Image 1 (cartoon, one colour):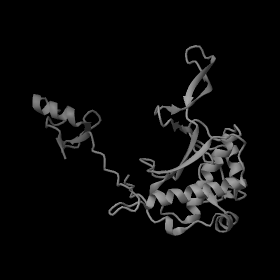
Image 2 (tube, rainbow, N blue to C red; image 1 turned 135 degrees about the vertical axis):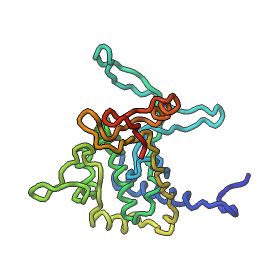
Image 3 (cartoon, rainbow, N blue to C red; image 1 turned 45 degrees about the horizontal axis):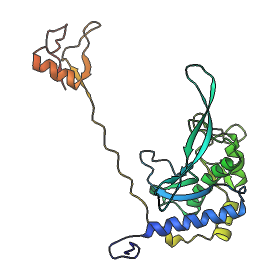
Image 4 (spheres, rainbow, N blue to C red; image 1 turned 180 degrees about the vertical axis):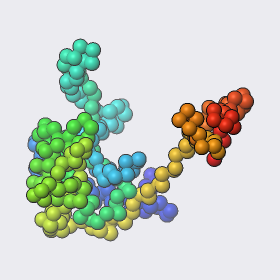
Length: 266
C-alpha cells in the first residue's frame, strides 16, 4: 500500500500541523477534565470560506465512526424540542447525529503567532466544555453570551481587546450583534502554553492563501441628459442593464421631458 506521507512531490506539512493541534487539545483537556462518557473531539484544518474574519469554529455531533464492514455511519438518536410554526406548540423530534465533536481551525489564519493559534483552540474548547455541561453559550445568530464570557475568562482568555468599545470605567462593552465573539490572550495564558503545551513552532509552517474577492459586476447603469433637468425632468436616471438593452433593441429609449433628448450612458 502506498502512503502519501513523505512521497516525492507530496507536501504533508498540514498533517503534522493538525497532529500538533490535536496534541495541544489533549493537554488543554488534561487540565480541564470532561465528564465521563463525553463524545470525542476531532481537530480539523479547513478554509474559512467567505467568512474571512473567522479564526475557528466548534460543531457538536458533526462526525461519526464508519463501520469497516458495512460502511454505515455509527450515529445515534438525539431528542430535540422544536416549535411548530403553525400551532406555536413545542414538539419532540428525534434526529440522527454523529458521535464526535469537531473543532475547526481556519487555514488562512495559521499565519498568527503560536500563542494566538492556541488562543483560538482554547476559544473553541470553551464551547466544548459548555456543550459537555449543557450550557448554552451562543444564540442562534452566533452571538456569544455571558455564559461564554465567564468560562472563557476562567480559561485565561480576555475581552480587554480593541475589538470592543469601552465604558466610562474602561471595561469592554458587549458587541450589539455578535456578543462576546472575540477573545484575546492573557500573559497567564501564554505562560500556560509555553510551560504546559510546549507547542513546536516548526510544525506551523503552512497556511492557506486568502483568495482575493472578485469585484461584483454592476447590474445597473446610470443614464444622463446634458440639460439641467428640473423637478419633473431629472438629470439622470438609473435602470438595469437588461432593461436598457431591451429599450435600445426596441427603439424605445427614455427621452428627457425637458429637452426631448435621449438619456445616454456616461
